[in-house]
Length: 76
Image 1 (cartoon, rainbow, N blue to C red):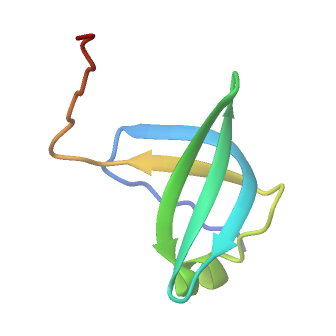
Image 2 (cartoon, rainbow, N blue to C red):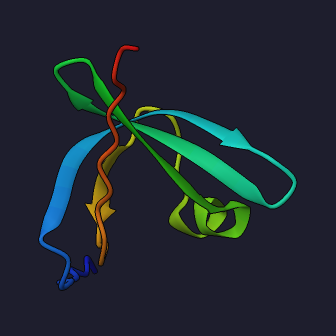
């Protein structure tokens, strides 16, 4: 039986898993969200396994942040 889950984060961006790079404990999951944009999430290897993530899967980048920083470079 399928289950649906609702979450409070409003920034949910649909995409496709492009690549999964596992390290010793942390994995970097690349999600292609279209238009040449790839969002990379750092999650545990255990989370990758629990979610049964694989390249080509449909997935969501869910962004919940209390702060957003902006940086710029100036010539000179």
